[in-house]
Length: 612
Image (tube, rainbow, N blue to C red):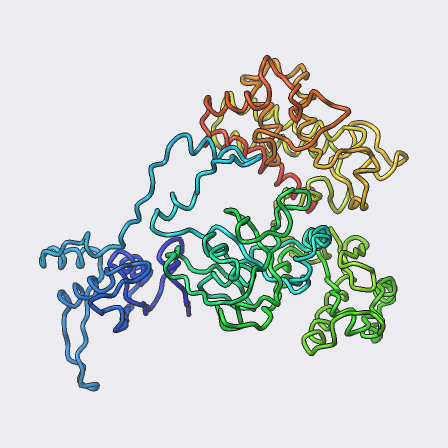
């Protein structure tokens, strides 16, 4: 049995025995009936179309299909064959939805099919300048064209903001600017995942400041057990139905631990593409879906959303309410695993004198989930690390093993989703080995695509892409101390997470990027003179982690000649001018395609090293 929204119309190769569908425009119905006996089997395949009286009203105006549902139903009724159903003393209307048969009936009845299909939204003209602006990502340009207008038309708003509910933050936390760093630390350890997000039009998130905190402007379905997008199609702004009386409430915008845009925001500060984390106490959803009048806390599903990644990264949140309600070391006293007892002994819990939330039944349930989560740490690949982002240690902790659990599925996670994942692994990986693996991956892709001269440039970019990791400061960060530094080219990835404050101690500037250093070194590499397009080689090296289009956001006092500096030039061009040259030469789309070849080769090589 398959139950689906209109997403079943395209992109799924299913062969159904039967079909029941709600009435829709003719093109949508033909798509759906295309899944009925798709393989041409010798079965009596039949489908049923149901319609509501509201859809047949003379003034019916569906938010997606307009009046096309009513017009299509009337047409199908006109061309249908009517038969008597004896046992039910009723009539049955049927239409042959075979491709040729339906076309013949429509032509015979002189039906104008253009009046029966889904109305097309009007989109603005896509100007070349818009593509140039979109290709500049660091930083986004001040005049940043709204992508949703070109995807969904000018009459409908596109989902532009992702919203996440979390129970370990409160409205008081967001109102206190001093808590911003702590909230960012929590999200860095337990980052928002797609499975716990819903997407809403940006106008919905910022329509009214009162609606902002509770995500009350999001109209659609959401279940606590399995959150999803609002709908398969965009919604109209006039569908907004918000009647709340709260004053301004903030959300926390998550853009990455070191991104300056991360922090509490009000309605007027919301931008397209933001990931907004709001406290569960804001309400707005319940177990049955969207509930704008609900003030009950929304269920936090972050742990469930992170499960597919537990083979790569695993974190257990011991939140303040759980730490206060239940002494976890006592709750786990029945465990017969000594290593787990030792682990829990390091976790301070709240005592009776701590000013923390009172015990609740929900906290009791949470403590049992935490118990199961901590017990899973027995399968950690590396020793778990305790972090205390909630404040004093006795207020709770997050226990993290950055390399996941043994035997757990290693769900795909781009190495740039977590910055530390780009230079750490479950075991050390030499720079020489990683570089050779990326070169081999690039060669395989280039051969498959039939590239010629560009293949040589891609191969050279792969050979030089991580040269900047040989920086002595970075090697010290990976090795942990001078005595453990390997001989030769050094490490590409460390087998241990970086301790807190390690970047400052080794002398690396905040937001330092090894790609920028790689560009600096590649600019003087003798092999670059043999490249077909040395500008392209340098660009691919500098952008292989998605940064540097066209600026880097750090200053290195020991290197003022890299592309992060205004002093950088290569054959008379600075980094931004080089970007402009390549964009005109290759076009924004082809340049992005070439970037993707190297970037994905780097991802796959890192995954191969983890699985070896």
